[in-house]
Length: 232
Image (cartoon, rainbow, N blue to C red; front, side, top):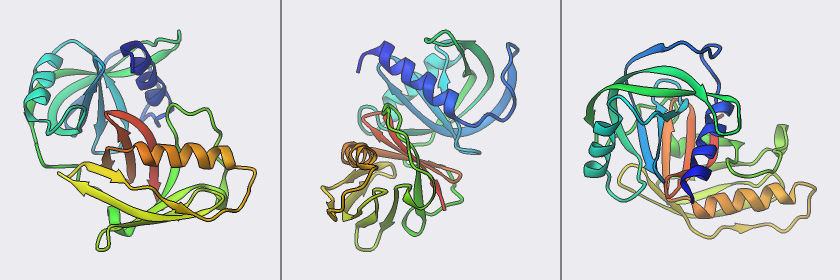
């Protein structure tokens, strides 16, 4: 993925994330915090452990120290890495002419390899409802037809619904954040939401890692967010 395309995707992710306060042009303190950092295509994305909010990272301040630590401690290219840092939020011009709230790193503290966010939702016992498909143009249905997924850690099985058909299959996980979903079997019912089903199954098949924070679960494909879920 080209850097400009990825940066635009990060901006759209930040714009769709729930804000804690209305953005303005002034710096807002964020303080010391732990989160999950991913660096890909010359752009960084930080997911806050406290609320699961995704923030593009400005390439200034102590960002260079953060990127260097990421290069040393990540277990493979574009893999998520837990980090501790201090920073503040600033609203900047976005690539589409709008404005995007970004994290400016004031001080990088340390990398936390092998760790993740303490989460209020447990991956294998939670039903995860699809909230968005970043990079996709499909509109998700509301109510019971919203796609969802559930993991069975003991059997390494995954089950759920595409919003139209039931699905089941196997998954693999490693290193705390590595995740791949093997080809899934689905029922064969035709529904109006077939475009959603296709985009959802494609996102699942592309997943290489996961980022879990608060009650949010993101699936990434080589660093790029492809699906976001909320615990139910």
